[in-house]
Length: 101
Ligand SMILES: [Zn+2]
Image (cartoon, rainbow, N blue to C red):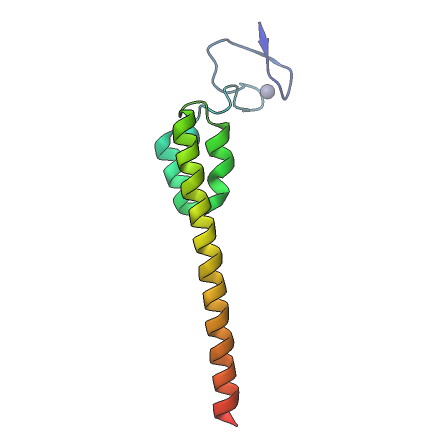
């Protein structure tokens, strides 16, 4: 007999989720941990999808490193983009201030 790690109620061997509190009993095996789920998360969350990659028990280690590299590259790209737009905003503000007066 298994018990739920969260609410300690008995669970069936075949249950994917606890019938009492809804906790996933098979961490790392939901949709979010499949390739499709990770790609989807990466598109929405960017580098923040990384924990899903490493918690996954569905994808292999090589795939994990590939996703990690991709997400890290995405992170660097995002920072560069933010920095670039920050500079552009500053420049635009400077021009407006200078030109207006
Ligand atoms: Zn439970």
